Image: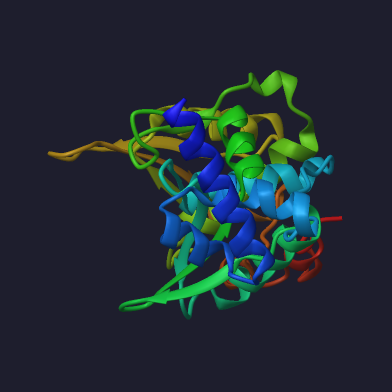
Length: 266
């Protein structure tokens, strides 16, 4: 009976504070109660405070988001606070244009507006809170024991659409790939499974590439490299949303339209 009284008293305090205009974070701190619990009562009293997260049916947007997350994303579930946080870790200056592109993609297709955090020395973090997006990532990606050591797609490639696959590759290389001084597109990851999957996708689009391993005392680096002479096929079939990298690939005689033609998700 005492436990029921405690629950009812907490409920009474939550409702009282909500009606008196106290914010959800302040109530959470004051009563040491998770925000999700407070928001449940808030929604019943004042209606929905935050827009409902959308899960896009657009396969390009879905693939690109998950690819970008696979490359430079992280997520965490803070059980005590009821937070599901998704982050994209980018370069403050080099990725400024791409960060703006990714922010607009998330706003348009997921209905969420990421916040921007600048970290030293040159970091930029896009951050959003969403249980539905957290669950979406968990549905599509294997992340074990940690994302930095292992990430790959759960579903077989043959079960995913070509639009999803092409934009998934784009998302990974836009974030974690690079273009060297010879105009080669290079992707180096610790995760062999994801490199193998990306290789299968490139084969599906008939893009010539090489897979190699760079030995290390800590973890071997698995590398995909696409020669400059094969860049036109990559730009035509996959493309870049990170225009800084796309411009570095461009070679004399190659139409600029290859670089910008797929620069936005349609």
